[in-house]
Length: 369
Length: 263
Image 1 (cartoon, rainbow over the protein chains, first blue to last red):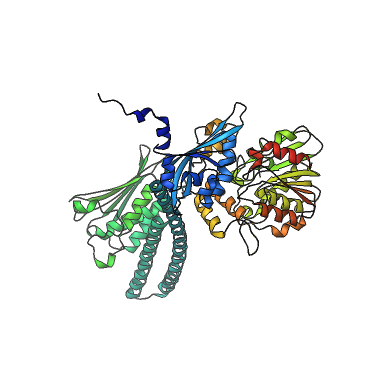
Image 2 (cartoon, each protein chain N blue to C red):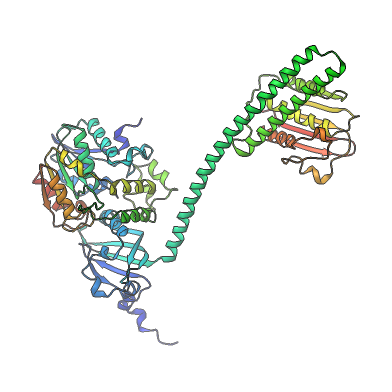
């Protein structure tokens, strides 16, 4: 074993060459002692520092901070740990430091001196400043996002209003024409106009719902368990029957209790599902709708015949803008199923699809509550 | 609405015909007076409080617009004085609270009969021939710098401390147990303090005023103190031997002795 180096026990050496800076201040804030490490970091000579105020070697912000925060706290609690301060080197360069300060007191609590331990913290301060800058940037971008989002909300509301108004005029016009329609051809045209208005209205609803869900509050519900759901479903299916003459829609109802839901939204969900079945199902087979309450759940299923949906496509059905192969006249935006799924989700329920050569079936299930 | 007593964390102690109200400056709270206030308890009803945003005040009462001017703080002083029914009281302000006191005196005739200013400055930033001691750039640097020092404040701990002002042990694990402030509010208070200009308000102080000036104060130099002295008609100035900006902590005996000659 070699002899231990004598400097290990040399406290003078430990003070002078410690891996941190030491300063001792008199009660008037003037430097009494300073170690070599700090002199090395700052480039000052010992006799330049001794007798001067510590704050003379600190930048202006640090001086104010020392006088308004550190000095009073040292008097109150006897210490102040982990404060950042910037010293200035002999060459006028800043050196960032982290500092702990401790007040030496006599038995009566009178201050005798203050000791400071300083660690160079240039990298850490740079890192902190980057974090602060990032936080500031995040705050700013969040504020601007909010503003944009509010503008979009307003835009959606105005757009919805402006799109529906002309549609209402067309609908009223078609109704007036319908009263005086004489020939079959005229009746057909009027019926077609009404169907188109209805489809257009659905598209607008879907687009607006989608925009809201994506840009703002999501789908909001107006739940009401007291009023019956069945008449709403009747009406939706009747309307679809009218707009798809020649197609058969079989509906079965077994709702024997209240369903705590937003009836308009569930009507919209049913309309989207049945509309989808009419567009994509075989035209010579009926669309089968079944609504029931069972085991604490409300279930609505819509089934149609025809070619099955390829397995790869099943997963994508509920994504926005997904469009299957369909004849151009029924081509939509691909939002109907997406919104139906969103409505299901808002009701704490789920919308699923199964498809085989026998039938394609969409099933919505939600808790009755 | 919360009462002004809770809002400003007001503590009334002592006994006496006249009241002495102590106001702290930027950087701390009513703890600033812990070595001075006890000396006056026997003869005066002493009133201690925290400005909104500091110490144990109600942070929810912090209103950016109101407290963007010293007048907002002065309003609070007058409200507290009214609530306590102060008449002919002595207002003792430290640092920026000297000017808050000057504004409060103007707004509340009869409430204060004497004014003590410890380390006052009517304006901190130099302006033409006027020497305040700081340049605009230096004050901007201070505001930046304040972000690097959170005074033992962390968002995580804040609710525990603020919600339980009577249980300081909740904050005991933090680095500093006095003068904690929300850094955002501290920055705003620093801004209103160091950009204030109350040179025009000095002449309106119409009550006897004592100015206590430290020998070596880099925040409020002797020149700055003399400017205040010249500006307030009925004022006297005592130069303390104490150095630094907080003689109320570093040299309480000297401050107490000087105040006794006046009150």
